[in-house]
Length: 511
Image (cartoon, rainbow, N blue to C red; front, side):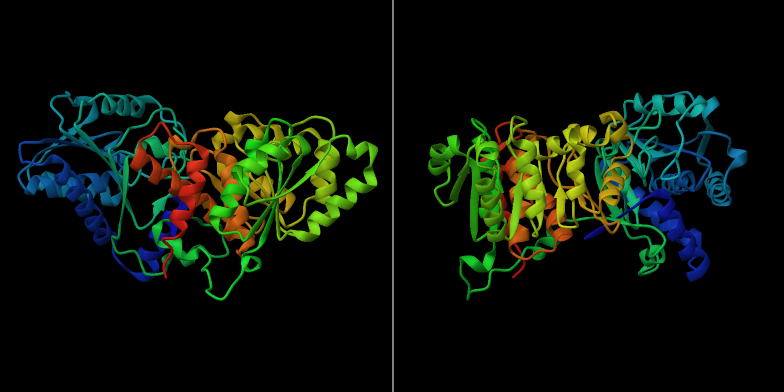
């Protein structure tokens, strides 16, 4: 597990390390500069490279000057370019500037700079501290940097112009090939669009105090993300077991001609390790379901039965809820006659974890009173369009701060919210935040979301706590997509292949 911090959180850790622990800021800065210089040198390949270090007047700029000085001492052609008003610089900025001047380095203020050859550009203008739109001279600086023609760009801590907490572009931003960040990865480097500007992110240890992340405990939530090292969170498979050991998943999905959604969710639940999966679907899907997934138990209902035989229908719902350890409700159920009663019946009778997805969420948006049946067992998995319908916000408003949007919905209803986007966010009812760093655009295909729902259900069936199942399911789903792209390319993935790959990823768990 990796922590993802905002700029303000990182500043608190920085102050704690310097003021309380007593590690001098110059020590941290020199180690940061060495990490940036090492990366720039790796990209430069030879001493003939022309390097620009474009530096603001804060400590990020001081890091950039120090990195430029290290490269200069190795024989590279380095120009230090000062953006903004140097007279308003921090103490560390003035120290690094004096050292560079004492060495006879070329230091030029932006207003006097005449652009020329640039092979490697070190972006040290803003770092993590930017919180308002870039304008004036700084806007000109970032635009010239973007058009400098550099072979490679190395960003110091964060690409300039990207908000370190939300990933938003604040007016303009610099595209980096590599972002060298310090201590902890920044939240805005995982969220889009910032993630697309960071290139490869390298997290470098520069000497922050061990356990310094704990100073944030009790004050604010620190987001996390998973990586391959977290595969041991996948439930183990004990040798002495049977199909009942691994749980029973009920998938309530698929209106007439929409059986694919039920199939993908059920298949993914089985691939994730569930012992028994039952599909409850429209009677007209019976034949196709039996052919697609004969391993699944099949139960059906008729749309007219809700009105014509309500007692039988509600008894059926009660029986199915009593059978299940986990319920998936919504994929492909449509928005036609009977959807409201179907949703209400299951929400009233379920006492096990339930994942609401797709048309189930559209029903809640259409009939907001359904939300009054939400309990702490509910996990919702909206994509951005569905979330817009649930909240009344526009997609653009949601994207301004996707973490805040998911967190507010989760806390308002006391549920877990999995808000699906290019970087999916999971927010828990107790304030937890997970931001996914796996996955890619080859997964933007019909059925992919149904697979994710099934993966989460399979984890719940095997005993995972709801928060763990939601976050881990999102990671595994994305990791499976990454494997498929690496093996087969970015265009041809199908949802059923994603479900199949999840099982192979899970098999890699630590023994």
